[in-house]
Length: 162
Image (cartoon, rainbow, N blue to C red; front, side):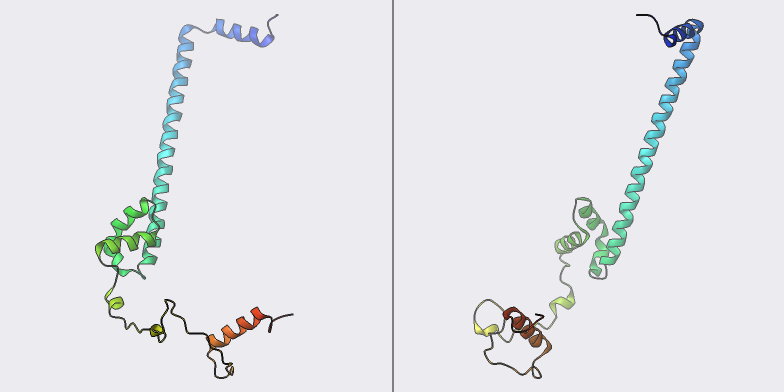
């Protein structure tokens, strides 16, 4: 097969170059490649640092928002952060940490006046009132009772858009 024009030109270029020139060109190529690889690794490190900073900022924002619900958590930020890094949500990490430290129930929770349900002594496990068989006048019903009556009427087809 005859040589192409490009092959002839390449051959001529190779013949014209001295061994020193080809070594210099190889050296420059290697230096350039090393420089580019170093730049790439530096960019990767910068990106990783930026990701870490963004995660840290997100954690701080969510943690500070959660402090209104769990003020005792501010003393255990590092423990919460450790759990979040393991995959917990902020809320779950706070609850787990406070539970471990014995600070989950605040003083207000333990002293709240817990009123038993008026239906508690009627038996059964459900804390719901027994069904009423009498029809009440809407004027004497509470808002919750009126709402329940409307929902029931809509289910039975007695009321609604037709």
